[in-house]
Length: 453
Image (cartoon, rainbow, N blue to C red; front, side):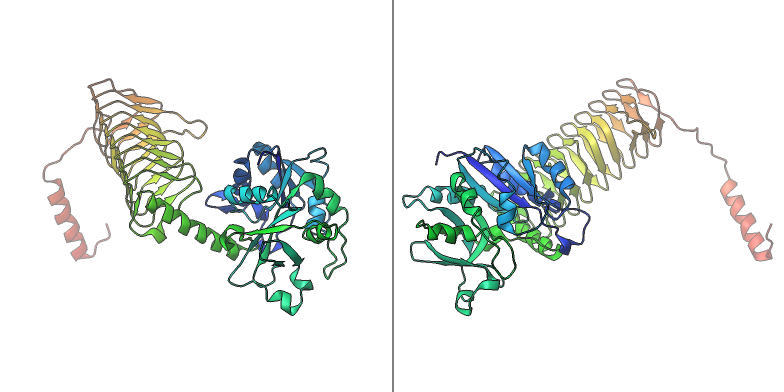
């Protein structure tokens, strides 16, 4: 397969069943909009052009795809899939390679399946088009594909127009196709809307090619790859399937998930070998976990890099920009944002570290806070190697704690603490002997006497 490749992605539907101000194809699966899942899979084929056909809510879709180098074409009226594909004709003017036709709300078709479609298009029998078929548990209202033993398509029919015998066929049309660019728009020009819905159907090009003496072929994939999303419940169901497959892959690659069904991955989560993940852990986008890391229960991790041997949680939150060095420890109810913990550094309890650099071997006591925001700007805190920050300390940035320095518990540190020094910033304690005893006697007498004074 050496021909140039283009992709047309249909994303003009209104998606009214989603009942959302967000365009249907921009609702996420595993932390990434459905449409971008598809564009990423297409990009692996190195296409010459990718055209997204937009309609209602076009501004949202155009903004989402622009950073990915895709063009857009506008379908002002919703007149069927054949009409939608024709809207991309101007964008593909002069293109004579192969065209993949995909759907923005069918996000999980793989690059491998797309490649199989294109390879079949270049088979020895030179089909005019290749249709991707599947066999769902419930064929329902899907269009049917009637094929012979060689996978040559005898007939394609929409459910609304199908006979009882045709509806009994279990091979369904996913809508995805591969067609030579030189054939596609010539065939589409002949499509009419003489059908039950009064629409221009893309699959009609198969029968038009047959009428001209050219056959088309069907190849099959599993239903999961071509599952479409039209409602919130369908989105949740596809998310669940994606997560199930991703958990299985994580375990096959050498991670231990104690309760797999409670762990949620993002589309780009990377786990090393011998990683232990306890129940109820959530990975947002941008997480890389090295080998031999332990992530305890109820931790939420996003945009973080975790080095080998580190321990996280339970109940930890790692926000974007977090970097944990080898053997670093982040304990319960610790939140870290845009901060680096060096090798062996520890923040074990009830701490917030934001916009900070914590040196190797440093110990951050319970209740420590880096005060990194003054209401207008963010500032950094630097904590040197081997430093010890006592519990319930507030480090008011910008501030530096030197190597091997100590900050006394309960301090509010507003000035740098030099290496090896003690930083102490709290009021002097006073002790009044006998005061507590006398106070209790006085208050007990008042209570017995009913006095309110």
